[in-house]
Length: 381
Image (tube, helix red, strand yellow):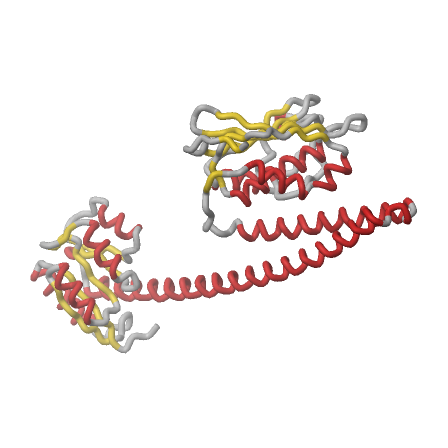
């Protein structure tokens, strides 16, 4: 960005230091580093600086943190809080005691020791501060542009997904109608085909739901509230209807649940993952999957929820790797429905809880997650 004129505001109560800055800028006028004309405005108090900024455009502020009416980090916060788009260079004549470092960490461009200043070092600092600020504005503009594009893409994806789900609903509905009203007119292969249509429709619907869910995880705009696990699990079991029927699984679900806090759409995916994995890995060639769901208070303000299965169990080595991303364990070779365990861990962590598994090879597994207890401490009936 080329400036025809650079407008600086010097906020300094020491007249000798202010005169030094003015002289150094005069010496550097028209230099190769900063060829632009410099227009300097002066203020010796925070109040007068704010009045100037309110009425006069400014490209950069040279700021002493020790003023008669403001001192320390608060001085920078006052300026930067009201005018965050104007770059600030700090001035001091004492060693850094940590305050200037904090200010730089919070957005100040540089810290200059007045006792060591030269015309060359001053204009370089001004040039670099303006250039960094220009690049920062460019990055922020690009970020805002990408966020807008992502929002538009997300809206488009949701619209298309809901349209597809609507068509899938019709397909499954007609197949279900044939299955219930015309089953006696169908031969064995036709009945199997209708059943496969319904299973595929439900699976495809689950895939779309998962994709929308993963897209929603990028958002921090979630509302943590008291969970209705009865309703959540009813929806999960509905989504897994065909998988439960195909495996002839038995699932024991409590009638009452201790009240916990979380984000309902996300916790639904946690239950979906745990139960679908239990259906895949539970049981053996002779026994169908047998899952037991439950919950208990841990006594530390947290509630532990679990899914126990009657599978072959998981080795200690694999247990340590289960919730890590991009990891496949050797003792669980079949993939379950729903999001992966690493994403389950991210979900529960964002809701304030933890995840884990207790397992013994040959004796099944218990996958659990914890969530904060609701202060209402009620039970859903």
